[in-house]
Image 1 (tube, helix red, strand yellow):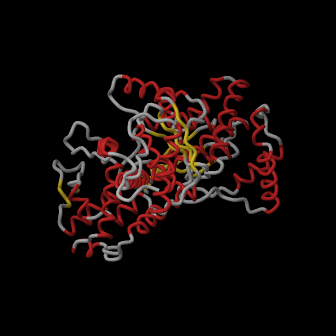
Image 2 (cartoon, rainbow, N blue to C red):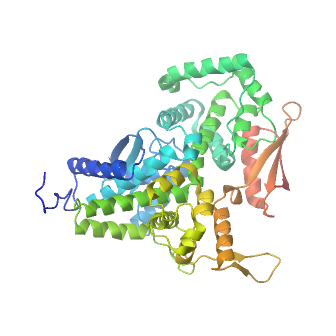
Image 3 (cartoon, rainbow, N blue to C red):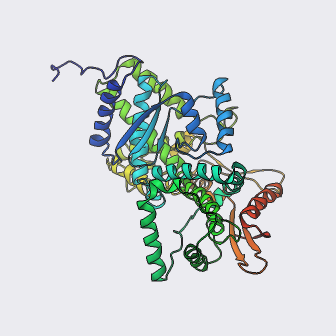
Length: 497
């Protein structure tokens, strides 16, 4: 125990680090995260990797275990060129939504940056992954790493047996449809027949028991009768229209062989795994940034890190939450780190030191003092769209200089439709929240008819939103990919949303 009046010894006092210092700092961060913030996390696993390994992982959806595909190499080459020429930096960390939660730290980081990253990834992201309802509903933290290991080895085996070009053709087509390869509103349909359900359960149990060895077997080129009947039973139970194109193609395609169906299923499962992340960018990064800022500040207040470390941290943190103005050459939209962190800091302020405006807008939380529980409730029960609609305050709108513009292609001018008055604040909040609705950005294409016998024609319908139709060139390319997987005529028509 330290003598009264003396600060506790610093966790570290320079940029160098070793594993003993990392462990000591991790334990100090964990004490604040669990005892003060009351976070609920998966066990942590921390890996140290090189900058090139970080580039490699970053280019493949942040998954070091990801299977090979040329698009990942394209991203790697681009990011490597940008990094080497000094046009961009690297991600300080990569974190995987798994149990245990794996955080990859770059070995070139200073010790201050390692502390920041551990607070950010191993506690902020970790808590969000474990608790947010979208991740609980749509992802399997226990099974993702074994599944990716299986997928990588299975695809490599298919390349050995059937050729790189054959495998790449299926992966290319499937990747082109990833955005339309997810269930947005419901789980995959379940078979109603009790006998079929029993067969599926037995098969799943058998596959689980032999999971680690499944890749060593020759991927099936032909489908046995039992598997064919099970798959056809699933197809019969699909109610049209069906939103998940990859699911329908995987089950009903007249031409795909079993190993090809497995490749489509792998891409579909990966797309579904990342689906929650697309809807929670502001919240997820905001949560992690709020947590790392609170923990690093608290470490300094407790005397566990020195002035040099806190200044280095604040410099990095300021860069993370920097929001360029709309006329700044660096502007590329609203920075999710900046918006998420600002809103969460604002919730803390409203709970602790509300103004009259805050009491009017947020009567249930203003002055409550219980900002920890308010934030944890938001991290659990909201996605970006609903979080902004619920908690974006006039103060944050003023700080970000937000206003709304109405633009019509039929008009020669634009209209400023919402400014900083009471009605304007509410309109701005609604408009901004709508920008984070995936339906505003991703085409809604559904299977509406399929001739499973006869000419095997597949009919798709694009639900036109706000008059925005598909780009003609892109539409033709996508149709070509769908025809690759379906093997027969595919028709795509427009319809009202």
